[in-house]
Length: 344
Image 1: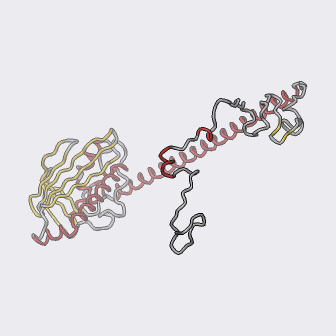
Image 2: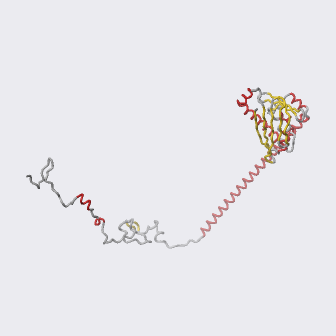
Image 3: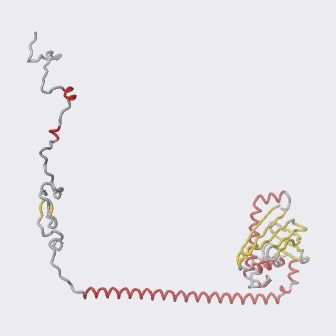
């Protein structure tokens, strides 16, 4: 048993979506793969679909819940069953989910086909049919419960427009008063008028949007110009205020207001310029980097490092007394005897 499930969101109220879906005999007018849906009575119908081959079956309705669910079960032909569930997402948005269970044809060959990618193809076909249904509902005037009022019927991909419906479906349509030449001509005229009115409203809305955009742009430019004028006026007022302000004269500062910069008028030495604001210490001539630091007085009682140095007794014992010179009586091999000694 193969299983397939697809869903689509329709921009329409729940009750309208449910009622339009129950018109099975109108499926060939906007669906592509459904070639025939004819009624035996209000509970039984005959279906023909062209999808990876031609399949026919009779179904009986079951498990119908108004505005919630539609169910069916085949009684002859391709063995299948399914459910269509409706769920309101908002007052004007409805989710439609289709769940189909069927026995693949041709026994083992059908199962092999399912494993070779037929499942994905069937899912795509079901999704396409649901999208056609959503388009049909969304192009139906608000409050209408008959698919014949939809402007999406007989589109170029539908079975009816492709002249691909069965002979039985064609005869059933011929008996429908809504499918008479006069009714179809009246419908076409009405659809044309609605499309023209819709196009006119779209053009009018576009023109209004263009005018609104031009007004907003003009207002934006005027605002920028006004802000720029105010800024220029403020700058002009500030300039006039500064120019009208009387100049106050101050005596020149001996350090900061001299020609050439700070301390330009003061004497300079090899150790830097003399700071007239802070007196230098008397030892500034000794070290230019330490000229501002006070020099400590030398402590006469404190010994220097050289005076504090004292050689350790251990080092003296190892090195010996430097003041004693020991002369050797034994001459070196190959050398001469010490001139201070005599040989015996």
